[in-house]
Image (cartoon, rainbow, N blue to C red; front, top):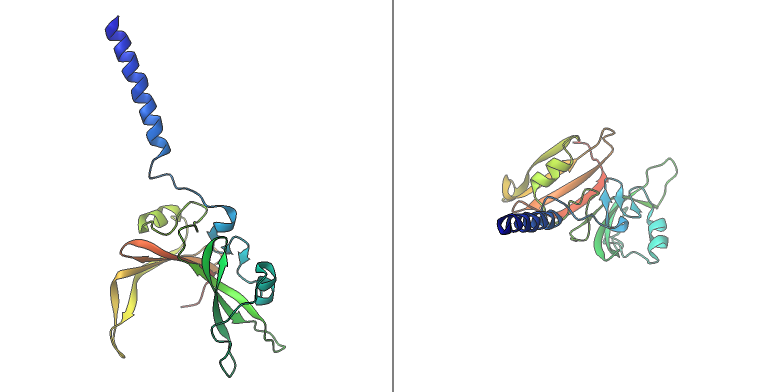
Amino acid sequence: MKNVLLILLAAITFTGCKQGDKEKSPGIKEKASAENTISKDGIGDLKIGMTKTDLEKMLKTSFSMKHAKDTGEIWMDTTTVQYAGMEVELYFQKLYSEVPSTEMELFGLSTKSPLCKTATGIGVGDDRNAVLAAYEENPINMGPESVMVNDTTWTLSKTNYSIHVSDDKWDKQISFYLINKKIASIEAGLQMGE
């Protein structure tokens, strides 16, 4: 009788330990809040295609653009903002239209913040396999990045790697930039032709 009780107690303890392990499993990703979630469309309320003016109103700030003091016509510019506890770099380009415009449109953004994650929980610090598993149904372009050795020579990096994930529309993409096999930054934006 004592043996049966001991075996039953051991089985209950073992089952409880196994359930506790499932809660801490490294395969289960922690998801970000809606404002910290990145997709090919942007991060939270920062959406690709928004104008600089609309973003300044939404964030209640005036952007300090990197090329604001340059003379001549500027077609692209960048700025860095704080959004949802993250530092986010915004990439702007001038709107192309028949009527000349000075309005800039958001065409991309990136962050190195560990707070930012995809809907599947992938973020800074994860590896290439996590990205490939999450986006196995999407077109993917990946490989080592090219680095400049000198003024005329380029070589493939041994530490820097990029993964660009598209969808069936091929209009926007989400990109993961890895350093030493770990995601160092995530970028979303319009897909540029190659």
